[in-house]
Image 1 (cartoon, one colour):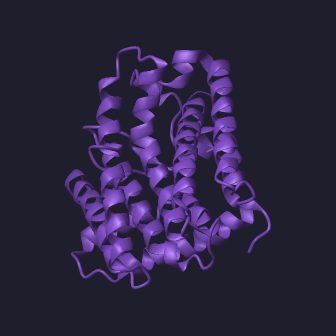
Image 2: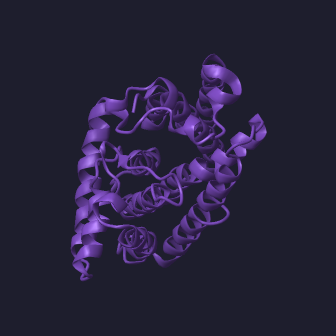
Length: 294
């Protein structure tokens, strides 16, 4: 196993991306739909969520393969959400990760269907995994549908839209991002640990860890939208301000956002210690989420 986090992440990015290609290439579907799905899935994502899932699994067990299909399904859900977020009816973005967004390369209708395809196919990927028993499949699909649906990411998205053009307080902002961003991160952490046979108590502490990790990710995202490097981010800066979105820097200022992020980091690390997995790559990934520059 790679000794440092960069090598660890690159190692699993290669494995995850190969599995993504394997899962999509075997589909016998209309070519425009397959091309559109593959375009966004292979558009150079950081693969942070599937890596988190595998790291959570490896905090308790060996052989990542049992966690691979859930990791790929999670990345499909994440990518579908990005395709739909970029549409004119939502954020109306022309670029994602430095490349034209899906609807700019294909068209709006195809982009919508590509997102729909990735969303629904993700559950089939889990259901077809021969390494999972029926109980595990039901638990994971139940969790993924909850975290990506109206009780999770989709619910967070509507709250985020409602928060435009008005000032949200900190509690409202945390709730938006707990759902919009944090729920998929929670799925990654919970599912990996669940498949690794973590105890019920450990799972509770890891859900606490995932809550803070999701907030860390979002605070840093908001900070980068103000102070980041467009070349590294692959998108224009200031888009949140243009959309009058509620963000941590807008509410607290840059210094206040950084201070709050550091508090979240401390809380996340404490939760890892209580779960007795502070020596895992989850600790390194917490630092990475906090200090990432793209």
